[in-house]
Every structure is written in C-alpha cells, then in structure tokens.
Length: 184
Image (cartoon, rainbow, N blue to C red; front, side, top):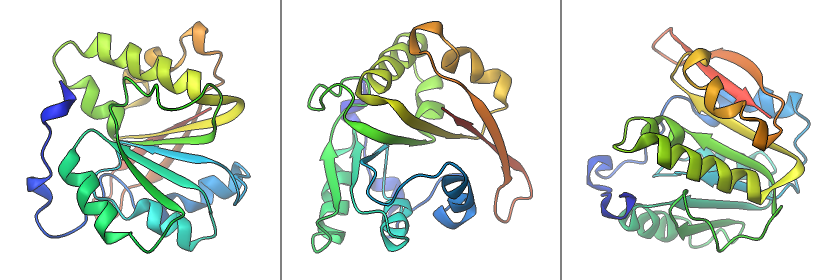
C-alpha cells in the first residue's frame, strides 16, 4: 500500500504539515523530553521539523517514511548532519527496530493519512501496534493531528497499548484553526 508513494508533490521546497517545530516546542518542554532522548519521527516526508529539533539541542533523531523519493531527498539535504538519520520504512512494519527502543515517537499527520486509506482500520492497528512495541514503557508518543479528539481517541485509548492519553491544543499558524495533540 505505502510503497508506491511519491515525493513529487513537494516539488523543490521542504514542506511541513499542520505545524512547525517552533509552534509545538513548548509542549516538548512541558513533557520534559531530554535532549539525549532517542527520537523517532514517523512519516517524516520532507519536513524541517527534525532539523529544527536538532537545532534546539536534541541529539538522536531517526526519521522514517514510505516514500523512497522523500528519503533520498532528505538524506542528500542532511548528509552532513549524522544525528539526523533517514530510513525508508513502512510505519506498519518497523521490524528493523528493537522492542522498547525509543523514548519519543512523533507522528505529524501520519495517522491522519492512514485513516484516509483503503483498509484503514487494518493499517491503523498495524501502525499503533508497532509504535507500542518500539516505544519504551515510560516513553512518549506525540500525535499531531488535524482531527478532533473524538475521531482519534478510540484508536489511541485501546487497552492493549496501556497509554495515558492527554490532549493539548495549539493554534495552527496562519490559519487560525486548532490542531489537536495526543500525548502518551
């Protein structure tokens, strides 16, 4: 399903869905995410989000996307930044990662994209099961979504995951509307 994605729609510019780092940085500060936390950004696309996190002091950021064109582009852009790693990977099948490997997993519109796909319930379950598997027991999963909480809470509050879900709301830049943030 996700292996045929293209990066053409990004053209020459890097692109951020929903929110830039500086619009949500305060939430990561509130969560007390340490600079040396092992971080995974799923569905990274061509966003500058991870670069901006690196510039803010975070030192270990892995980014995955199912688009080979996006990953190729990002590897080229950040070839001189070894703390930003880019891997071609399907978020529904992250077997290259060990159990309980990450302190923080960030999803910025990846779940939103899967919700809109054919067979979405199957893929949502696969994605969230993988996130649950590779997230440390005391880790944090941040979902940055355009959807109202009622449309995402059912997926995130599944008892198997044992997640405590908290909702934070921030205004989206330039649009004056609100993005929802679901935190573990």
